[in-house]
Image (cartoon, rainbow, N blue to C red; front, top):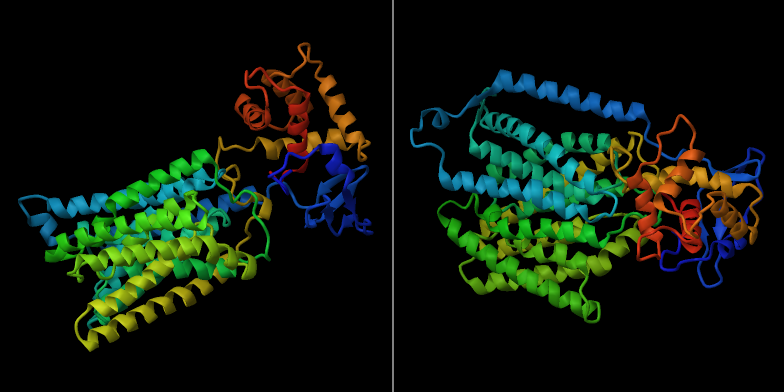
Length: 559
């Protein structure tokens, strides 16, 4: 059923067309091949024969409790180190302790806007994966804060040692340093979008810990040494985060394959659209926060550009989809104008250029999602979950090129080129190294990717837990067309008096078949299974056809 989700297959018909290769001496088969008459062959993972049953050779959940506790240990140690460093080195900036008028209202407003972008905008934008909402929001919250606390330390230390004097360990804190921490979190969150759902939380934490100092080092070289003009971080933040993430994705390749749970649902797309709207509204603050006396120009230019990319995204999406819109394009390509104008928001004095740049960025972003991302996944085996190459990578390069045309003087053009090459070098080389290192950490089995229930209590996991149970019942004497009779026997076993099985009856039956050591199925878990397959709009329960679909789903689907 999960191989061909566009069809509701008859369970007996599929079973009759299953052919299993000869079992080896060690009890493993090479592959399980499902061959409907009009569908290409689909290869399955290795299986083990146990009597009359066929079971997955790999465990249902590949992340052990020890690995989960290792994450807690690494995070705990890193956090203790940060606490010690803050006690030993952090102070308040003199202006913070002496100013009588309080905090600068504009600066604090910009800080709030960027915080909303990071924690709400990026977090909700990544909730489109139907079974990864907790991870998208929770990991964005946690990992962003790790960056917010660590980036100011690295930045101060790099800059204090840059003048050839003795390095000063003191870190004066103010709103500006906290804002810089958010910029560092933005770069890491962009990279996170590339590997979303395919790495463990420990791998993600290690990636963030290693990426943050590399981001700060590149930022220091570009802004302090080269003196690049990049007020909104088109190069230093967006391009760095995108190509660092793509390099990590390259190192995490597992052979060309489909990820059935890397898919959206209508509800999750709505939540992701909430993230898009928050990002859209506050992006002018992101580009204008550091623009100084040209802040108003930067904000207005960004509004023009991101508005133009939105219109272009809808237009091109309708063209490439023959009059229909793709929610992926609307969620992402609409923001490309904000990225593309990041390096020149305070430089462009002709508003028409902002409109043109936004239109170009939105159009290219849609093309990227429509054709470039599938090419990367199918031909290069680079899975970019959120399409960061299309939203941040290519528009960031466009922004770098635009800045080269917008600056005055040939020397500054060279600086823009050098900064772009420096950023790409740090991002790609750093991403390859960090990707190699996190690949050494035990990762997820393909079946466990894009699912919350590995790490989160209360996440949906009923199908995964029910599979061995129903498989065991159906496998006894299972052969081809007899499968329908086996399902009918199970249906009768529950002895429904009214011709259908209620949710409560299904729950009782499932728990009666579950080992005593296993947690009982909750009403919510059973309701999850029922709601996805029932044809009874009255909501009374499962008729035989629906129960057939429940058993089929549990038996074949990779949950």
